Length: 130
Length: 139
Image (cartoon, rainbow over all chains, first blue to last red; front, top):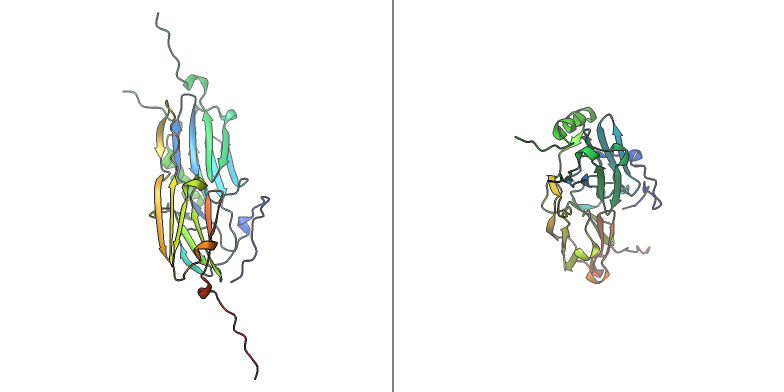
């Protein structure tokens, strides 16, 4: 049993594409929550390093790609194997209701939270009754 | 009738189109509790499990003889007042994984760490299970 050729350094740079076995594409589990001023998108991305999340907005689509950090130890020695090294991929169509210039994202403990602010017209307003 | 507006209309359709274009998509995994790997690394076993969002204090690891138990709680997406759920897919709540291993473990030397939502447990085998190097004497 040898542990060799670790693909990711502790300082960050991750090169899973160079792994001999290609990463499988998997849809991450996602929660979507609506607030008065924004929608929150929460995605489970376990095993993805802090700099491994890629979010892109293009032509009304929000594309999420995140590759897991994979230590190349080969297939030897597994007593049980349920986890599959994967690349999380998911795309969302986003409508006109989102202030695309102010989208914010944070990533902590394998959970990505994307805040998609509503355009002002989408936010609830209290109408004064005279 | 009013229909709730959501900017995520067509969520499923667009994902299907995308997956067709991308090819090679795995179906979401369904296991009882978080997915778990156990690997034999000679003098120890390495157990690895996906527990996104779990805090270290919410994890309990029990080792007894050949049995490993991992307990924990996956946190639910917070829902402060005035918010509501549009989609809920993330698993949440308590889980327990119990494994009968082919080796006896040394419970005093177990180490665990959490890294990017992945729990890794290093489980040294009991002394009597350690691989031994046999010296061949030349006679």
